[in-house]
Structure formats: C-alpha cells, structure tokens
Length: 515
Image (cartoon, rainbow, N blue to C red; front, top):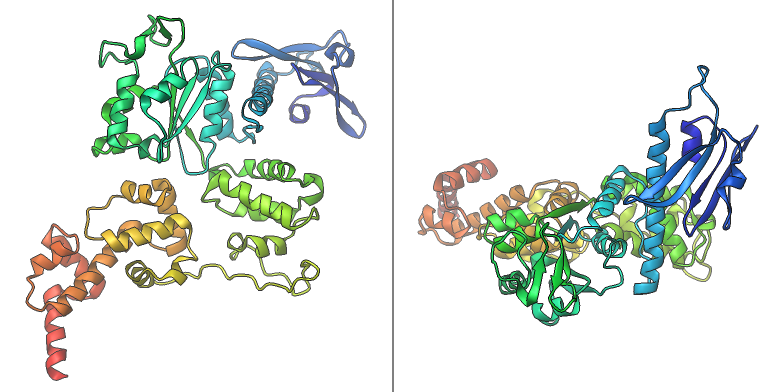
C-alpha cells in the first residue's frame, strides 16, 4: 500500500486479505500512515462513494480486495488501471505466501516462506500460481542452498493435493526403493531432491514407476491412469498416484547429452521447469531475508539490524545462498546477545564476509566482556596461479582451508584426476556447486579459470615427467598428463614455459652435464 501511495494519488483506502485482516491507509499533511486492524471491514476504511474496488485474486479465486479513494486527474479521469491491478496481483502473491507459511507450520512444524520481492522471486510466484494446479511433473534447478525444497513444498501446499502425503527423497543417499517412495506418496507429492545424484540404476527404476506423459510406454505402472489431458494420475482403487517434483543443482540436459543422466527420465520430468535464482542475483531480497532470519533466531530485527550489517550482507556473494545466510545470521544473532550488529561483529564471527569490503575498525571496537579481543582472520590474498597448482597437487591444507568449500573440493579433484577428460559439469558435481557458481569462484578467489588452472597443472606434471624420465617420448608425456593432441600439448607448453618440450628437455640435459 505504501508503494501504491507513491505511484497513485491516494486520499485513503483499505486492503483486505482473507484470514489476515485489513490494512488501512489514512493520509494527512505529514504523509501516509499505515496500521493493521484485526478482522476489519474495508468498507469502514473506505466508505467514500467514489472508492475504487479492485479484487485481489490468486489462481482465479478471490483472496481479498482493495478499496481506494483516489484523487482524480485534472481531466476527471481515474488513475491508470494497470497500476492498481499490478499492486493487486502482488498482494495476491503475498497472501498466498502467508497461507503457505501457516500450512507449512502445521504440516512440517516449521514456517516455510519465500521472502523478498525481487523481479526474479515474483517470477517464481507466477510459476507457482500456475504449476500448483497442474499434475504435470516439475523440474526445479538452482544452486546449492537456494529455495528449491521450499518451492516444491509450496507447489504441493497450494494445490489440490495439499492434504495428501509429501515425501522427500535425498538423491545422494536415498532410503528405500522407488516402489516404496511412490506407494508412500500416493495421492500426494514425491520430491526427488538432488535427482542428478541418483545412480543410473535408480534413475531407471524411477522411470518404471512413472506413468508416461509422452507414451514412451503404454502400460501405466501401479494401476495409475492418465486422463485425456494427461495431467491426472487416478488409480483404479480411487487413490491418486503421486505428482513428481525433481530438484537439481546442475543442467540435466547437458548431463543427458553426455550420457550421464537417463534420457527417458529427463523426458518425463522436463514439463514444468523453473530456475531458483542465487542470492547474488537478488540484491533487493537480502535485507528482508536478513531481517526474517534475525526474527527466527531470537533477535528483534528493529533492535539488531544496522546499516553496516545490511551493507556487508549485500556486498557478499553468498556462495551457499540461503543456507549460508541462515547460518551466519543465526550465529550473529546469538553471539551479539540482542544488541545492534556492527561491522566488528561480522568481522569477528564471519570474517570471510568482510575481506576488503570495508576498512578495519579501531582497536576500541566493542567485544564481549571477559573475553580477550580476537585478531580477525585476514581474507584470502590473491596468489599466482602456480601457487594454486602447488596446492592442488600437494593438498596444502593451510592454503586450501581458506577457500570456499566447493572450490577446495574442486582443487583436490583436479590434483588427483588432472589426466582425465574433466568437464566443468563433472567438476561442479564433485564440488557440490553449480557450474556457473564454480566458474565464479575460480575467477574471484583464484583469479583464473577452471580450464586455465587445469592446463597449468598438466603442464607442471609434464615438466616433472620430462625431468624424471629423459627417454620418455614426448607423445607419451602428453598423453600421460591428459593431452590427446600432441600439437595442442606443445602449444600449451610453449605458452606457459616459454619453450617447447624438446627444448626444455635439452636445457635440463645441458644443465645436468655442466653440473
């Protein structure tokens, strides 16, 4: 309503939302004043006969209405209708979010709720509105720590199956068999969390338990049948088969193209698709997410929030997304004891967030009474690419410990498997982060690319082989370190070492002879 007051000439009005109450807007000379009234009637707040009534709907069902008293334009015309209907649409999304929050608290014992009003999150609201009332399979893609499970629960909670079971299976360590999962989820929703991490055998079994929306097979497993429009899974005994939602952190299409994911399964899942954006692409959502996390963990957001905290949170990239934000804010809320959270608190309890974003504070900075002041950890210092080659090959624990966990796993994998044909997708699976985020980590923390570092590791190992095995043919050296193309190996070697492999070997022999 406050935004509406900025966009349209309001003299008064009221917003009524089902099961939530009425928000009354009364403007005076000082501006707008917003206040909630429990179980109010919008007619009382906007009794003006010229009030404009704008219905608020969600999935074509009424969930509230706005009654607005608007100043007329000089020509007597009312303000543009698109503004009013856009605000009503956003109100409908918010009303549904709170409804899902209450439902999740009853169902799962925790108040799941999407937080923020960024354009990317509003797109997810629109996707949810349409997807919830279909029975087609859903495929959710997003980096580690994004709200994929929350969105899956919301799809279930907003649809006609909300009173049915919601069964979540961990793809990395699934318990039971696909037959068990589908039986337990009958009449509800089956969430395959991390479906890309399931073994090929499990992927094949899942396909066998899904009625084909595409006619890949004609017998419907388990007695389930498809309606004429292909979206209803009714069973002969009256129990509905489960709706399937799958989530992944990687591009399943690329995995399928490389033969590392079941094409038949992807074909049956790839109907309704959404990508949950990472936090770094949603800067306007950071502050409301921080405030919500503070409230969840015992802190009064209005007392603990500071501009310093919000600025640091907005400047940080949140590589583990909402999971990391929740941990960090919970830690800060507990360790600061309910007082305002300052820059020094973040530096002390989450030093990796500070880096060079803001100058260090003076030594007089507040610290807990009775505890010695702890020297802050310095942020990772940019190092030459050859340093990271050494770290990858020797597993330098001190150096690797300062890196993001996913990047640390990637370097260890490269150090062990450098001679294999490694793709960014495969490396991201080993690191448990998305390919795009892993590329981002290589650029920001190592100042190089994945391919650049892999090439340096291979050439470094080639130098070791040339020095240790003087009679080993150059072709075998190239193949031993992962190069199938001799020409490519020689060009890469010359670019990084400054001479060809043969020249390098001759110089080593000459130095040994003179030694």
